[in-house]
Length: 297
Image (cartoon, rainbow, N blue to C red; front, side, top):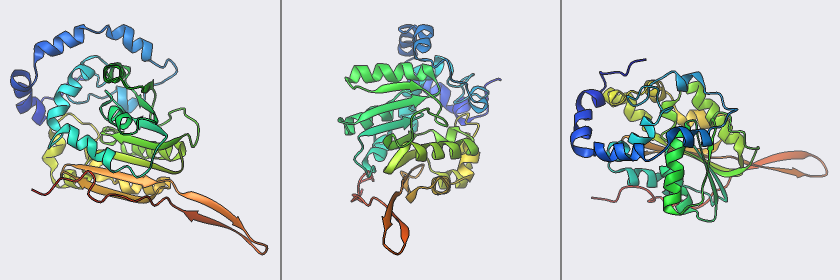
């Protein structure tokens, strides 16, 4: 499959990145500093089967998508410029909105670990695990965690079926994952997140603003994103509600992003001499309404 040449990135931004914003020589040196075949093989789960939607498409103008060394080499240098107003601010927005105090965190589609590292820094006592379908991206994630002195586990796994036990996490997060999956896969990931959470646990998602993407079509043409239009037409709130989450909400974040979250309900059984009934209640932690929001100009 050839790379699309009609995206805004390929037509107008590639020269800017190659000649001004990104140092090609630095990327070349980084690429050659790693034995990608050896390191990706070390992290590869031999029992994992890549889903068709993932290995049959190009992503971000890279032939073969994330299943090669080109993706992790270029991902961080480019991403720092394409998440307005700035990548650290955007990712921190997810951290600031977390409503639980997690002891065990799973970061789905963790990529090169940019959000995963922030989760560990925000909750240093928690066990943090990142999973991704690309062993190449995990190579960089592992390097970044070691450089930062953070103890994080990275696993080669499919977010649709992670293999972890039921109710084994307090927090499941995903950053910039759902727009890269077909809607049916996104729904499956949401259901898997619900299964993985303990009662009272939270799912939180940072991704493109679905309403903005629907209203501003050119935003879907910046990069080669095979599923972004289907994502824009859907609703994360609906996916989470259908999966069983309560207190579902989505907040706009710097116009082009959104942060969605929901709580897995706590089910309490109470019995009396005359009847037995089930009561459903939810964690209602205090939320700082200003957390993660832009300061007034």
